[in-house]
Every structure is written in C-alpha cells, then in structure tokens.
Length: 113
Image (cartoon, one colour):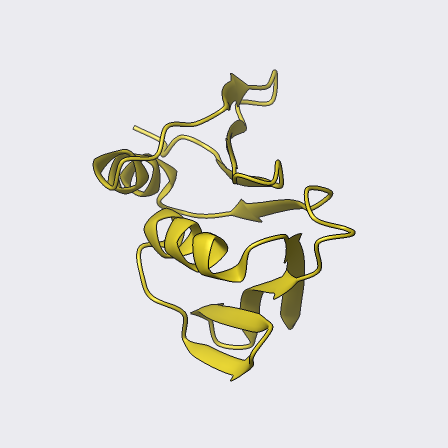
C-alpha cells in the first residue's frame, strides 16, 4: 500500500516548523514552492500544501507500533495533544492540531505484557 496524504495550510513556513516538530524530522523533500513532504516509511508520505482557502480542514490519523515513544518524543519537542482517547477496543488515539486547525492523530494499541 502507498500513501500520499495532504494537509492544506495557510502559511507554509509555519507549517514546516510545526510538522517538523510533530514528525521529528525536517521535510524529506520540497517538490515545489508550495509543498513540503515527509516520508514516514517507504511509499508512505504526508505533505502540507499552501492552500489558504482550504486550510484547517485536514484530518489524518496514522497508526503506529510505537505510540508511547512517539507521544513522548512529540511532547519533548514542545507539542501537547489536543485530545488523548482510549476506545473500548483498547485502541488509543492522540490528536494534535496545527495553527490552522488541521488534525493529525496517532493511534495504536498498548503492547501486550
């Protein structure tokens, strides 16, 4: 499976700073003057695109195996979650919002002890 998920933003430079902190790395590449792309895994990318008219409507959830470590890393980089929920099936979802209001969630199950 391949993924190329886009998030519209009103200010590209502000978004690059936020998503670099959220994702723990600078953009993997800048294809043009209006986009920044982060490669999360092979053929799996999240990108921000300058589109002020649609900014704030993005919803992305990424399921990860290392949810606790990821949330701790994001916190250490100075970003607090907007919500932190655990559902009846034990799936936990931690959601963050950028300055435009776009939501990026990280989900996962606790490891079996």
